[in-house]
Image 1 (cartoon, rainbow, N blue to C red):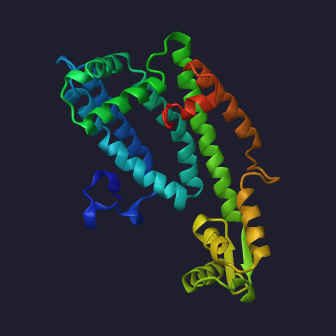
Image 2: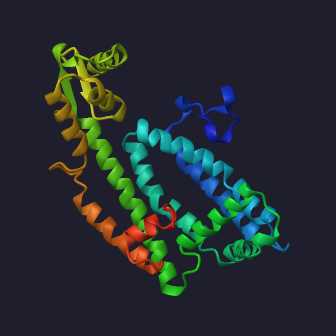
Image 3: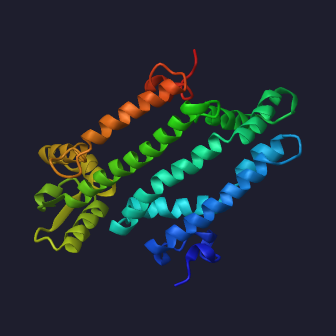
Length: 290
């Protein structure tokens, strides 16, 4: 079967033909996309022309088109129609993608060109939107470790790869608990629920082969409407407690150890970047300064 990533998409608005993608399509697509993006980044970093907004920032904006396309399809399917094969690919890709982005953020020649444009930004006559994009790129590079050196640079890259793996495992554990949990409901328990939500719960019961007329799972589209509309308060409490405890069950998908390791790595990364703690790092670019 032809890999859909290597053909033109003729669907309306060139939307991805999701029914044609198979797990085996993603590894070769990622391999090509990462190689293309790496070559594009090298061309930007090694451009002999003086650094400018156009040949640095605009070039960065236009780079990685195939990678964006592959990532968009893969992340959609991995979060909504996953399986063992996709999850195995996701775990294999996590450190690989993290290493790719770390190599870009910590590319000395690339950051030197970006920094040169940033330092003279007030004299470039940039529009407000262009200035914001330039400032955001520069800040993202700095926060990713562009100014780190030696062992700190290597450690930041290693932390990024490990966090990528842990984050993937965390999400897969939550998704596994979502898929395994089913609550069957009676007609009386559906009081207050709109017809569209009732129809979806009935369809889910038929799909799962349940003997009860309605079934709810912990997928967001299933549980949230029930929390919003169901009249039965005890039912809403049961659903909420199950929803809030995903990844916190006594099974092989418990996330406690993953959370502890993630917190430690986040704190270490924050310190390496010059912040007192991870909260300070996380909020530095998202809160008003005064």
